[in-house]
Image (tube, rainbow, N blue to C red; front, side):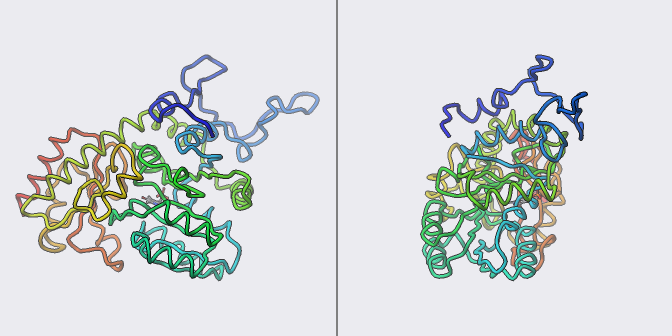
Length: 381
Ligand SMILES: *Cc1c(COP(=O)(O)O)cnc(C)c1O
């Protein structure tokens, strides 16, 4: 896909889409579920029969995402999990998959259940250990490899190019959950991935008011992609017009938001790293991060708005800091314009998340105000 416009231009102008009917500079919302036929029983607009078949607002948002990813095709889903599920449902029964360990917990949990039901052999391993992970790919020849980079909440970085090469040598497909990187900072398809997935609920929409997911592929003719297209249509995992329209609207400022979130997250990570009440900071933008050089090579323009902090002490101290914050909302999720803090151990006590870990999603507020909030909260424990 030749595309010479930069992401900021594609996003701000919604890939050039306007409203042809009224001349409006923004596309309209089309909520109709069914479409007229004339007296000869021909469709008035031949592409439009029923909303599950063709959804103009979804198509408009998919167009923007497709260009941002440099993809051959893009499909929206009603949530990030629905997008992950769509990819896994394209696998045959008794397939083999290799999934990165320590990723988004909702994905891990659903994948384990699904693989058990479908007699799919599931392997889980740390994808940030490139040599061991690629050796495992060569040995197990998985049909699908799934990685998440940066990972959540550990902020581990996996080598997309090396893992894609090993996966293709074993005749498998590589899917990258790139939610934390956003299409602004990383383009996994350009690095060799077959599919890139995002929870568009996060930074892509960016305003904490839409649930959506997206898959983009490098080869729209591939069998697995055809299966996903058919399954989305026939099984009906489609996004509503209003959600798709909000997504298109939110994406106009995507590059600005991601730039600001990344700058502020780096500033806060640097300050937190030297704070006497902080034990450790996980952020790929810090030179102390074990894969900082790799992150620099596969992320462009910043390292995202997500970071994790281990407060000195245990659960009590971490929860006390979270409790004293007033600008950072105590809530799950990430990628919104407003900053959030989450004590992951409370949410998933059985997965080995340190009890003193706080995950921060840095928004677009004034970074001085955010630091004052963190400094004040840390001072009180
Ligand atoms: C939120 C999230 C998901 C799931 O997306 P939903 O839109 O909540 O269904 C998957 N992966 C990552 C990395 C996420 O942050």
